[in-house]
Length: 296
Image 1 (tube, rainbow, N blue to C red):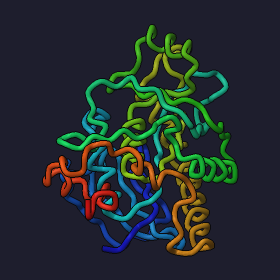
Image 2 (cartoon, one colour; image 1 turned 90 degrees about the vertical axis):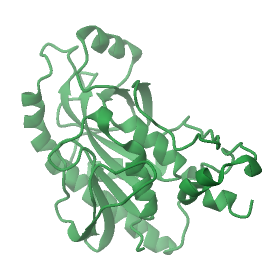
Image 3 (cartoon, helix red, strand yellow; image 1 turned 135 degrees about the horizontal axis):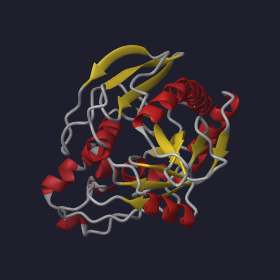
């Protein structure tokens, strides 16, 4: 199978990639079920990219309905080493205005119902999530946002809530008191699973609204209006980031390793006695852990 080293997850308002010359659409089967949609495989200015619409084309899936494990596992099967994730968020700070871009470096979990690990069933692993975003990839995204002319806020904390409802006013004010910067419904599980899959991950958070701590309530109508503006900027930022990432890899050589610790996140994380791991679990997770278990 051909490898697509760069993956893009399109969030609300970004269901396709402008400038992506599509080679094929590929539906993948995973041990965790079906991904959100077919992976759209193609090239941006000669740089190979695998694109996935997070909510499916037509925005069919709620945040709590997303099969995060299948989505990330599918990228692993395609050979993806870096995932650029685009998402719509609400702002928890007055200076982070709608249409601004935030590239967060931290997450806070307020979800309740979502599988967020590949492990279990006889294989225990504990990866570090102290720094949940790949710093090298985050800087590439932020630089691309600056170059595209976006008002970009580097770093920040993304609070991931369950949804699909928006916050109550009490919740919104409490979150502000915690010092978080933006609020969304999708990115934390992606970050955790990407780390377990040893894939670099970073988020391009596109501000659509102030959460309801502000004077006006959050409405879908208002968000959709800003989504259209954000989508065009997101396309430009991702385009620049893809070119920078692939160009950097070509300079290092096609077989050069990822220039960060993400590629070895599992090296010290697997704690189960190798002889005690069930054969079915070994096989299911082979694309993730095979290099550590084969021969053991």
